[in-house]
Image (cartoon, rainbow, N blue to C red):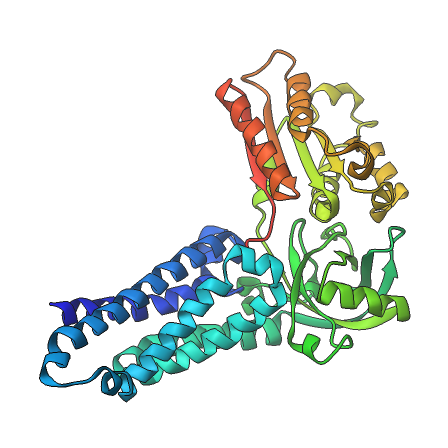
Length: 433
């Protein structure tokens, strides 16, 4: 019975491998079925990965129990057991998957993100190979998982969704942020295959979508590194034939710090963009709302600006629609910055254009001077003011993109207001890795 238990845990493990890789793929049919992009499904990928690590642990413990209860009494030593080919391969796969688990924890990813990326590719490749040779029964499942990985990585990401171009690099006034900018003529002709599985950024993008940026000129190691960044510029409307794209990259460690150093010496460089990716969940949350509140924390403006720009360009001109002004959707932006210079990331001209289109902008004093503002109170005040005694009629949409503390504060305040009868939809925009 112990052997059967260990065997069944192994079968469950390999049977779920293709699903694990499908949930990790950037291009996947699940989006066609549900509308949720890969980053929304990443939490399911992580939970399934944890379950597989548990199954691997139970399988290993079960086989150790088989040795102890059956093989040891007949003279099969532990050394002989561990040095058996099938056990050596199995132990190698077990160690690889457990290392995958520990290096995928949030605390590890936040401290050593680039190391996490490298280990995730190396360890999962080694683990698949070890499982393949560990037992012949695993090969159909390993083959499908490997096929999903190669199809996504080579065919879609490198073959269909990557665009290489020349981009300009400029350092903003704070001295610690790089603005990567490029422009090109939008491509028009699209194949059926592209329409089904997505187009590369040369065809345009939508608000809140992101790309994976590769800058080969930084160093050899950066040739194979791709880092996700939300497109900070407005999405080109269907009537436009030209695209202007910008990425806002704050320097921390690793890639972003190397890019800042490179930008000090070079005004332009060749980049590769894989994407766009993302869902329209945030935009869907804000559609048909009487009040829209978008909150950005620092570089979260890269998410907020395209949202408010898209929303305001869908609304009638406030000057030409003065007679229906009371029924117009009210769009508000709360932007919390650390330094006053950060407000120039978007540019005063752009902010003035948004104000002219009817945007209500709140920019509290920089946190470096006045500390963190009570964002929850600001959101509550805006919703209360806009309700005007019509609690059941006013539907508010709130989208927040910022640090975890800010996101939690906004969620908690909105939850309390929903308890009091307010009609509020909340969306949080952040990467799930």
